[in-house]
Image (cartoon, rainbow, N blue to C red):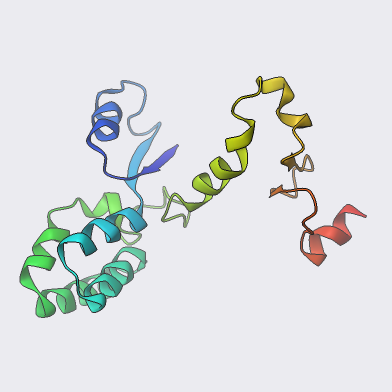
Length: 159
């Protein structure tokens, strides 16, 4: 299992001290959006923020290294900031495949937004809540809201 989160100290401590959440059973990775946001708080140049995202989302180590060299040319302190973060935790190029291509927490935050209204309900009532419906066909993995159309492909599969 791969847990992707921001770099909140409490989460890092919980993962580090949790006896069941260690390799080969699980790994902890950082959300690239949060890494870039924190980076941008310290280094305000748009070009550096873009390079940070490029470095984190690059899958080839050689290209990652080239981007990091460009960051170093732009700002040595920015390079040092990123270099002190464990590359395995925030980059696709050093991940070893745990992330399955997922670099951010966007999907879980989206689902949290859909389920926010249902949090007040007992779990057995989730399925009847009019604010969302979960599609039960295992080949169609999506959360929809009433009144919104799925894509044509999904609509055709449902007919």
